[in-house]
Image (cartoon, rainbow over all chains, first blue to last red; front, side, top):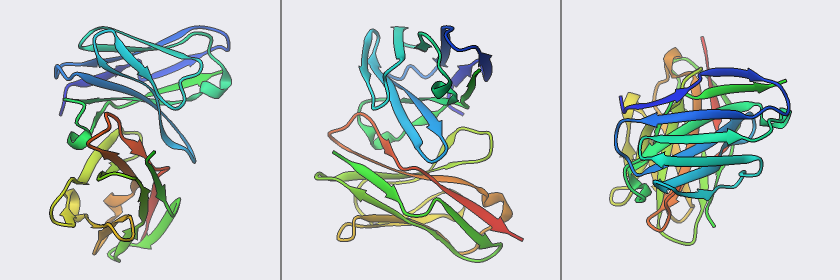
Length: 114
Length: 113
């Protein structure tokens, strides 16, 4: 398996609190992505990164921020969690911006905001 | 802009019967097409992909898909399903001008005994 891990695997947090999810890869891939998965919506892109300190927004970026200070780590932060951010979050990596490689996914983080 | 539509949210099928999961895409440029599978409580795995060349693509676990440019479709098929194929299947599209992949909303495959 590709070396990609997400932490934590599960988290319950209260509305209004900040939350940070971590994606760690050992593949030295340049591109990293954060998606959320919700019933009836499939996977929707939140943010992605194409290199250290280089990030861009996806289709559902409101309420989320990201940081990538080193190649192997891509952090997703919910500044002030809301119940609408209850979801399963997946990180994905790919070697280059040539999307023909497809993605390798992490196992996901299940976040519940109460 | 590209988009992908999975025409069925759920597909029930009897064990050992054939199955087809439908996917249509929209794109103004040449596309890359993918099918991913997600088993319960797991991440997504690449099942197969079409980049160019032969329109019939074979993937893992006996699945195959056919790229049809005139109908803008990329349907996934398996001649005989097993209980272990119970999962959610996602069709996805990209192109050589994109650095990200757009996913469909998924189709849940239910295998009936």
